[in-house]
Figure 1 (cartoon, rainbow, N blue to C red):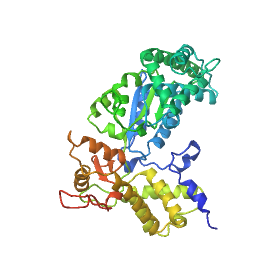
Figure 2: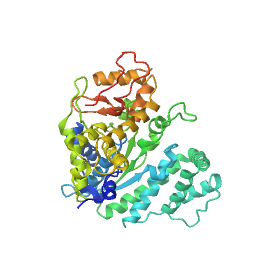
Figure 3: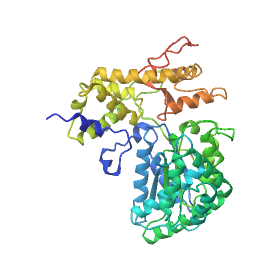
Figure 4: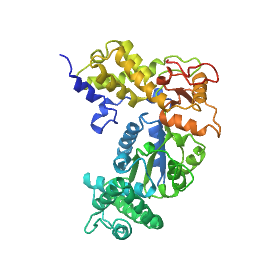
Length: 443
């Protein structure tokens, strides 16, 4: 019996696996070259006598959210008879405008989700406490059109959060109102966090962990007044506030900032800088060859999703060669695998054939052709030839743009190295200083 196209299309959603989909999880540690990363982050929390603040970076689509899901499950599970933690997941994309993020909105999102998730999971209901005074201040200075009378903590924070996300004018007013009062807002937040931790410990939990995901997706642009980028301003200039919460915190960090000249500072501020690298599906240049264990892991990811709807790989691809070609086109990006399968299904239906993969490749090439500049090509050519990039003050901006756009992909197998996105392999620079005219080759 043939499997409906819609059923197969649905199971390849590029979003992170939900808790009820963990049977579809495939462990990529062995082919990422960075095993034990989740365990190490969890151990820093478990072994510390004080609250910790960590960051996690990696390309968009590398699987950070899925790994954070593993971390959440790990931390909430009792170990050696000890209590587990209560973990609050904050999806920044749901709470914030990724085009414009600053510390006040992050604080509001954390408090809102902490109150909401403690209530939803029937642990406790947090009281507004000192926040009631803060709301009245906002009402007078910034949000006079919003009434806070009689609001509980969750609803009050939801009111502020929704307003600042949807209205740039309100967002600016809230920032202007909060900036002189930041310390008091932090005091109010930590008062509520202390109340939450006491309630959690009474119910057999060891403490509180807050994971703020999606901050790595914030748009990097010049800050309006700080003389730096918005990502640098938030994670470096405002680190004193980001690390001031009296619970364990984890933030996702943009990879272009992680691999900037701020890297040593970030490691110092956040006690390290773990990175989720790409899956190795080819060996490093210059003698790049297909890396069969990595390709097999991606086949496993395809198989386990197909099995969940009663299908097999032969239902999805018209040959193993087509499956392999599509996997190679991803460059080792798990989320891209799901996206390309969906694109191929939309284009040609079932089964996916060579034309479907070709169409995906052409669309990716068109996107990179539009965004690549002449100063990008020397970096791409060097990465294609050696797997390394010589970074200078003059090319740092271009290097960070290539990482952010995933034109350059980071791998940490063997030694750390960079690969050129396979979609760029068919493109030629307008003027090639080396004369090669081709910045990469498909493994």
